[in-house]
Length: 504
Length: 67
Image (tube, rainbow over all chains, first blue to last red; front, side):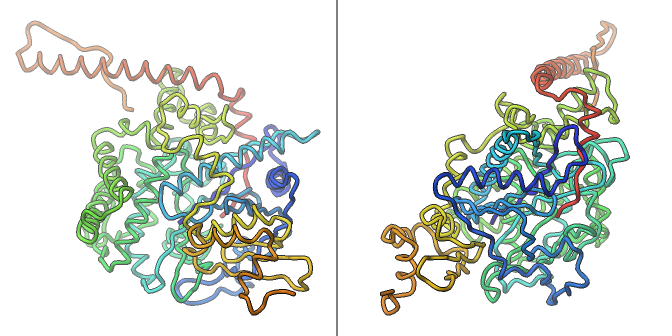
């Protein structure tokens, strides 16, 4: 699994700044600083990207595609691959951090936190350039004026799971999980013209149930089929419906709960009884009701609150784990399930109980506080500012991080591990091979991607592409001895090629 | 989040159940005042770092759509 986050970017006082340029400044500032004395020229390897492949079994033609869908074109925009295995790059008008592949929700939280630290550092460096304007970055999803940008989750699945089962099983879950994962938003409607508060930053931007687009007509279930792995065995489920979370508990549960629901789906357990009558309308209605009282309509005529739908999923996940794993269930699985149930209990009693764990509640508590103390109504600019500044990545300015330091927002990681995750790759996925090659042989890497490392070694006439097709291979356990025995990239290529092709 | 009672009312002419209700209401009001005070303390901290000129800051935050 992994998380890719597009960050909001602005230069205070300069709303018309070129976002592509500013985003490139961010990425380049970090890449140049990282290079130090051993610069890497590594580009992104776009060869295996297939953004127009649809999981429903067809390819959209390039002519039909919206420009934003052509993510496989090398536009020459700033792009860096980091030694922790992450990708730091410009996605059209936003700087984006794509975390390395991880195996657990807690590692997803850790590498997502590392990404935020990378972005904060990049902004600091870019702003320090003589003559530069200060650049501010926000881990959020909307400017409340009509634009939205995503925080995407990725989950490795088996190709043998039917896509229709994924759609049926996930839609009611995605419509309702925002009671836990919502980041909160001041403003209702895509352009925020209606005053008020809602659970989710992203909900209003979703217009269809299933589809390939990501920048318009956004679908609750995205059908992009770009596995970055062997397409016969693996699927990468690309989820675009989530909010950017500052609360580590919210990120942890978002990844853990979703992984459990996918396990239910992959095991063949039917969730079709939870099918909703009108998912797109309901994702908006659930978001617009912070009292959590709204009842969604199911296709079979029943109605239930979003909390009740979530409880259905949580109960089935618990039963599944008890049945299939029993006492062999790992600690994190047990922890996610326990927290999921407890969170639903708390939300049922009084959402304020969750103010130190859920972004929308923490944010709403601040907003209601200002409304009460200073007599403000929902149209007041200060409330919009609190919403925005909650997600500011600058450590001294960001409200979520300030709440964390005050002990008012729980933290699951610690500074030591988060800082290490900036430079050290996860040990248990192919990110380890990618990150370690970049660290050990920076001058010899021409390009890298999720499923390859491309070497450019003096004395070899052509580039050498080393595929890393299996996300679970290339771990520290698999290859550290090999890398330790190869002081140069040339040695490594010889070793990978086998003794019969050793260079003379 | 919703407004609560600010003051509990007691009357010696009311029955035992009403008195119990009044005590409970008083507890709730006290808890709410404490919670409000806790939140106010947080707001003081937030005030220190909140950007000045909210209207201008917010209106100049304009983004291009992304994925």
